[in-house]
Length: 292
Image 1: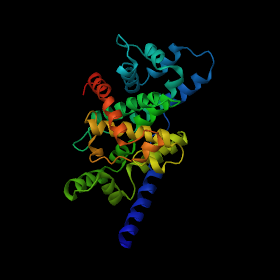
Image 2: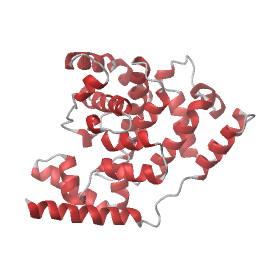
Image 3: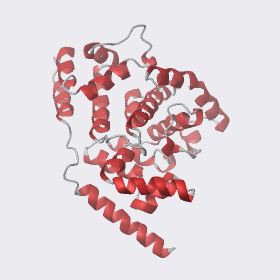
Image 4: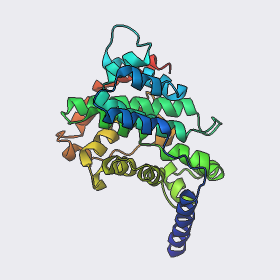
């Protein structure tokens, strides 16, 4: 047992060293910097923001998909970035661009072990449902919950891109040894996808609450910065798996952290299950609109 702990610690140190020294680790994209500068100006127009967002077609298309979400309930399709910004709102657009930039920057090619479209759909639906849960519970910032849901699993594509051989080993261990992905992560890398994601979020200077949510979205009870935000993200993630809508295979055998019940004042597990079931139509609508 002591040898196993030592080996995991050694693997952890090696993984952290690689993460710290990856020279082609994406820098903060210029689009994030430009959006921030524009939003600091009191007279920035929608057209100016639209022009900057339009420079990156990957992010632009995702902004449109968010604005067209059934969550916003618009009777007609949003087809321009200008209109999308008006729908999403100036206050939220910066956080959303930040999250989308991270998702785009750490994306890798699809292969048999990671389908990028499926991962994106899971991330986006989790974010949208987290926003709805936050609003329903009276949480002060639905956009913060959306961002937390969108990037909660950021560590998975990072492992796929920068530790590809290890990613394959993790998948093989899960398939052959009947263990969870988290166990296989620790056994292979010495740390989890949550820790990898938190490392990158901290490197990009994201707010501590978001970093902590990424780290503890499977274990809200040990979150230090914002247990409420982490718990909302946990329920949204759990809902996709429980309802089998926009779920992601990495979350198979999802363990629900019942501390969420007390943190969010939800009475009991029966209330949680009814709450999750209540979002079935929303998840179905989101999945359908996104082409699942």
